[in-house]
Image (spheres, rainbow, N blue to C red):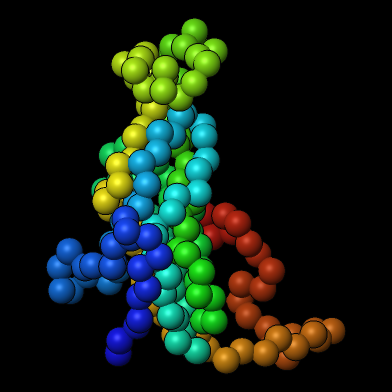
Length: 164
Protein backbone atom coordinates (compact mmCIF):
# COMPACT_ATOMS: atom_id res chain seq x y z
CA UNK A 1 0.00 0.00 0.00
CA UNK A 2 1.24 3.49 -0.80
CA UNK A 3 0.07 6.65 0.94
CA UNK A 4 0.69 9.97 -0.76
CA UNK A 5 2.58 12.71 1.09
CA UNK A 6 2.52 16.35 0.03
CA UNK A 7 5.30 18.76 1.00
CA UNK A 8 3.69 22.04 2.12
CA UNK A 9 6.88 23.93 3.00
CA UNK A 10 10.55 23.67 2.10
CA UNK A 11 11.20 22.40 5.63
CA UNK A 12 8.62 19.59 5.44
CA UNK A 13 10.12 16.09 5.23
CA UNK A 14 8.55 12.83 4.15
CA UNK A 15 8.07 10.60 7.23
CA UNK A 16 10.52 7.68 7.39
CA UNK A 17 10.98 4.47 9.33
CA UNK A 18 14.27 4.13 11.19
CA UNK A 19 14.07 0.35 10.65
CA UNK A 20 12.08 -1.59 8.09
CA UNK A 21 10.26 -3.51 10.84
CA UNK A 22 9.18 -0.38 12.79
CA UNK A 23 5.45 0.20 13.19
CA UNK A 24 5.63 3.98 12.92
CA UNK A 25 7.09 6.52 10.54
CA UNK A 26 9.04 9.36 12.18
CA UNK A 27 7.60 12.86 11.76
CA UNK A 28 9.97 15.83 11.55
CA UNK A 29 9.67 19.37 12.89
CA UNK A 30 9.40 22.00 10.14
CA UNK A 31 10.24 24.89 12.47
CA UNK A 32 12.50 25.84 15.36
CA UNK A 33 10.72 26.38 18.67
CA UNK A 34 11.61 26.95 22.30
CA UNK A 35 9.15 25.37 24.73
CA UNK A 36 9.17 26.61 28.31
CA UNK A 37 8.33 24.35 31.25
CA UNK A 38 4.56 23.86 31.36
CA UNK A 39 4.05 25.36 27.90
CA UNK A 40 2.08 23.64 25.11
CA UNK A 41 2.81 24.29 21.44
CA UNK A 42 1.32 23.12 18.13
CA UNK A 43 4.30 22.23 15.95
CA UNK A 44 4.21 22.29 12.16
CA UNK A 45 5.51 19.35 10.14
CA UNK A 46 5.27 21.00 6.72
CA UNK A 47 3.50 17.97 5.21
CA UNK A 48 0.03 16.63 4.49
CA UNK A 49 -0.92 13.00 3.94
CA UNK A 50 -3.70 11.38 1.91
CA UNK A 51 -5.19 8.86 4.35
CA UNK A 52 -7.34 6.38 2.38
CA UNK A 53 -11.01 5.78 3.23
CA UNK A 54 -11.31 3.08 5.88
CA UNK A 55 -8.01 4.09 7.50
CA UNK A 56 -6.75 6.58 10.07
CA UNK A 57 -3.29 7.93 10.87
CA UNK A 58 -2.43 8.00 14.56
CA UNK A 59 0.03 10.66 15.72
CA UNK A 60 1.87 9.74 18.90
CA UNK A 61 5.11 10.34 20.75
CA UNK A 62 8.43 8.68 20.18
CA UNK A 63 9.48 6.74 23.28
CA UNK A 64 13.04 8.12 23.27
CA UNK A 65 11.92 11.75 23.12
CA UNK A 66 9.16 11.31 25.70
CA UNK A 67 11.36 9.31 28.06
CA UNK A 68 14.52 11.43 27.93
CA UNK A 69 13.34 15.04 27.61
CA UNK A 70 10.14 15.56 29.56
CA UNK A 71 8.38 16.56 26.35
CA UNK A 72 4.98 14.94 25.91
CA UNK A 73 3.40 14.46 22.49
CA UNK A 74 -0.40 14.45 22.61
CA UNK A 75 -1.98 11.59 20.69
CA UNK A 76 -3.93 12.67 17.65
CA UNK A 77 -5.86 11.24 14.73
CA UNK A 78 -5.75 12.20 11.08
CA UNK A 79 -9.01 11.04 9.53
CA UNK A 80 -9.46 9.97 5.94
CA UNK A 81 -10.50 13.02 3.96
CA UNK A 82 -8.35 15.56 5.85
CA UNK A 83 -5.74 17.05 3.55
CA UNK A 84 -4.32 19.84 5.72
CA UNK A 85 -0.95 20.10 7.42
CA UNK A 86 -0.08 17.48 10.01
CA UNK A 87 0.40 19.28 13.32
CA UNK A 88 1.92 17.83 16.48
CA UNK A 89 0.86 19.03 19.95
CA UNK A 90 3.92 19.18 22.21
CA UNK A 91 3.90 19.93 25.94
CA UNK A 92 6.95 20.50 28.11
CA UNK A 93 6.12 18.69 31.37
CA UNK A 94 9.36 19.67 33.10
CA UNK A 95 9.49 21.99 36.11
CA UNK A 96 11.16 25.39 36.55
CA UNK A 97 14.53 25.22 38.31
CA UNK A 98 14.88 28.92 39.15
CA UNK A 99 11.65 30.91 39.61
CA UNK A 100 13.43 34.28 39.29
CA UNK A 101 13.94 33.81 35.55
CA UNK A 102 10.17 33.59 34.89
CA UNK A 103 9.85 37.36 34.38
CA UNK A 104 12.14 37.56 31.32
CA UNK A 105 10.86 39.89 28.60
CA UNK A 106 11.25 37.48 25.67
CA UNK A 107 11.95 33.92 24.74
CA UNK A 108 15.16 35.14 23.10
CA UNK A 109 16.36 36.43 26.47
CA UNK A 110 15.35 33.15 28.07
CA UNK A 111 17.17 31.14 25.42
CA UNK A 112 20.34 33.11 26.14
CA UNK A 113 19.89 32.25 29.83
CA UNK A 114 18.69 28.68 29.31
CA UNK A 115 21.08 27.39 31.96
CA UNK A 116 18.76 29.03 34.51
CA UNK A 117 16.04 26.61 33.49
CA UNK A 118 16.03 22.96 34.31
CA UNK A 119 13.86 22.23 31.37
CA UNK A 120 13.33 24.82 28.67
CA UNK A 121 13.62 22.77 25.51
CA UNK A 122 14.50 23.77 21.95
CA UNK A 123 13.22 21.74 19.03
CA UNK A 124 15.18 22.33 15.83
CA UNK A 125 13.88 22.03 12.28
CA UNK A 126 14.47 18.51 11.04
CA UNK A 127 14.25 16.92 14.51
CA UNK A 128 12.30 13.69 14.76
CA UNK A 129 9.46 14.80 17.01
CA UNK A 130 6.65 12.22 16.77
CA UNK A 131 5.57 9.21 14.80
CA UNK A 132 2.63 8.34 12.59
CA UNK A 133 1.04 4.88 12.44
CA UNK A 134 -1.71 3.76 10.07
CA UNK A 135 -4.68 1.68 11.23
CA UNK A 136 -7.76 0.18 9.61
CA UNK A 137 -11.00 1.75 10.89
CA UNK A 138 -13.85 -0.75 11.16
CA UNK A 139 -17.30 0.29 9.96
CA UNK A 140 -19.21 0.49 13.26
CA UNK A 141 -22.67 1.83 14.04
CA UNK A 142 -23.70 2.69 17.60
CA UNK A 143 -27.17 1.67 18.76
CA UNK A 144 -28.92 3.15 21.80
CA UNK A 145 -30.48 0.41 24.02
CA UNK A 146 -32.27 0.23 27.38
CA UNK A 147 -30.19 -2.76 28.54
CA UNK A 148 -27.42 -4.87 27.07
CA UNK A 149 -28.43 -8.18 25.54
CA UNK A 150 -25.95 -10.17 27.64
CA UNK A 151 -24.25 -9.98 31.03
CA UNK A 152 -20.59 -10.45 31.91
CA UNK A 153 -18.67 -11.49 35.01
CA UNK A 154 -17.17 -8.00 35.28
CA UNK A 155 -20.38 -6.08 34.73
CA UNK A 156 -19.98 -2.39 35.56
CA UNK A 157 -17.00 -2.85 37.91
CA UNK A 158 -14.40 -0.39 36.69
CA UNK A 159 -11.20 1.31 37.84
CA UNK A 160 -9.25 -0.89 40.23
CA UNK A 161 -11.95 -3.57 40.48
CA UNK A 162 -9.45 -6.34 39.78
CA UNK A 163 -6.76 -5.01 42.16
CA UNK A 164 -3.62 -2.97 41.80
